[in-house]
Length: 387
Image (cartoon, rainbow, N blue to C red; front, side, top):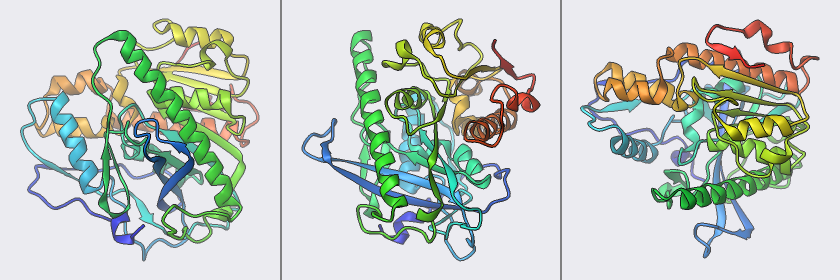
């Protein structure tokens, strides 16, 4: 994977606003490595003539980052795909914008002084690129976690591979309820297989047996800081359902968080025996979602449920930052922002999610003794615990 491709900047343009990520809240500098992974044992479910290939971004605490380039939040091609999708869902768009970079330095050496670090997997919402939850990923990395953000090729609106090749989504808009359910079920199966493959590759990397598919060297010390005995997972929307089903199918994942996703698969009827958290939007909880209620009844592990007051479905990814920034400049309609990300202040929404994710993963992976009590110091009027 060529270094220039990893550090590609969004082309300059006349823009009315620069959309930026808030600073991470932790003290660790952040490194990030984009890995190209190929599973030769699996035909791609969407393009059977090809082996399944993925891109993942690994965010981690870095030692010395000053000399390394900053990773774009969205590369030029992913930014264009995002803008095209936004134009389809939020007409009219009356202006342009550009993206500030992330806070991660490309391939910076990992900080090995803290020993091995817990791993947190991330799966985005359906059709969303892995870059669309960068604010959450890099904040966890700034607090000492290794975050592995997965892109699900041909389902994501766009996935960019080394050399600039882009594979766009092959999913179509389906109005028939049964067909839509079948498409969702297939996507979940693909995602679970993707995640278990990534877990295998992480084990290989941790044992010094692999890099990425193109032979690009891993950042210095990265393999040595992976704590493969402490793995958790979170996701937004279908990514949250993926986290639950992966935990059901693979005991390597010790804890999980679902950010406003309906649950699918056998985990709904079987439940889990390890810690899991459900965080829903204003109108999404067990009272409104029969799948959540069924899972809750079947689950026999530690569990928590919260509702984020004033939020909507896209309050749980970077759209909670992007859409209000564009609305403030008149680029997208104000009523669109309310429908998509609700009325909660973006900074409040993000701070709460960052705090709860970090505290839960600290708790479930060993820093605190009592799962139910650990998050109480973060209780906030907008984050309502559901008994």
